[in-house]
Image (cartoon, rainbow, N blue to C red):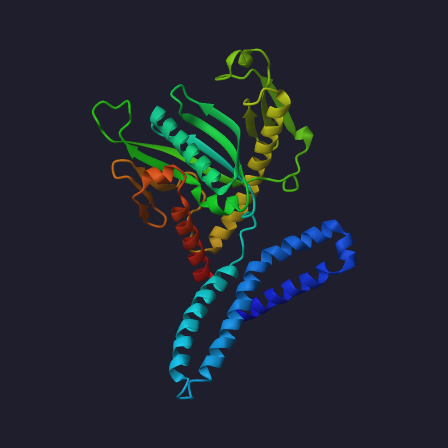
Length: 351
C-alpha cells in the first residue's frame, strides 16, 4: 500500500514539474491534460502528506514516553494521533481503489413503467421527479431527450441527461427494478397494490467513444403525436433513427424542429451503442469479482418504496430508511452514500 502511495506522490510531483515547463505551457492541449491529471491525484496526495506528518508526530511523541515529566502528555497525544492515523489509513485505502473510468461522465437516465398499468406510469413520473429534484439539489442540469406520457400525468417512458460534476459516480447504482407498494387513488377498497418501474443509468457517450458511419443510419421522419397543441399534426418533425448493423432504434419527437430531434436522437443512439461496449466490460469485471452491490441489470429488483410504512428499502445492502417522502423529494444522499460505501468495501475486500 505504502509503495503505491509513494508512486502516486512521485507521479504528482513529476506532473508539477512538467506543468512549470515553458514548452508545456505553450502547448495548451497538453497543459490542460496535465492539469486534469494533477487535479485527479491532488486529494489522494494531500491525504498521504497529512498521514506522513501525523506518523512523524506520533514517532516524536513516542520518544517522550521514557521521560517521566512528559509521559502523561505523550500518552494523550499518541492516543489522539493514533485515531487520526487510523482514519487516514481508511481514506487512503479508498484512494487506491481503481476508479471507474466512467465516474466523471454525465448520466443518461431511462425510466420505463413496468407491471401495474397506470399506477406504474404514475410511479415512473415520481421517480423522474425524484432524480430531477436530486439533481437540482446538487446544482446539476437536467435535459429531457424523449418522453411518453399518459393522460393521467404518468410516464410510460422517459430518457433524460443529467449533467454535472461526478453525476455517474453518484447515480450508477440506480439501475434495476424499483417497486412501489401503496393504495392507488383509483382503488376504492383501500387495498395496497404493488407496481414497478425500471431504471437504467448509462454513462453519456462522447463522440470519441463511438464512431458512427452515416451510411449505417436510416432516418425516418413522421408527425409527432401526443401533447403539443396544433403543431403536432402540421409537420413531420419527429425523427426515428435505425442503426442497421446493430438493429438499435431510437426516436425523438419532443422538439419543434426536425434538426433538433435528429440531434437528440443521435445522442441517444450514440449512448445506446456505447452501452453495449460498457456492458461487455462490466460482465468481464463481474466475473472477476465475487460480489457486487448491483449488476446494473434492469431486471434486478433493487429497491422497494412502501407508502403505508413510509419506508424505502434497498435490497442489495439491506438498508431501510423511514423517510420515504423526503427521499422522493430528492433527499437521497444517505442511501446513495451507503451504496457507494458498500461497493468500496467489496472492492477493498477483493483487492
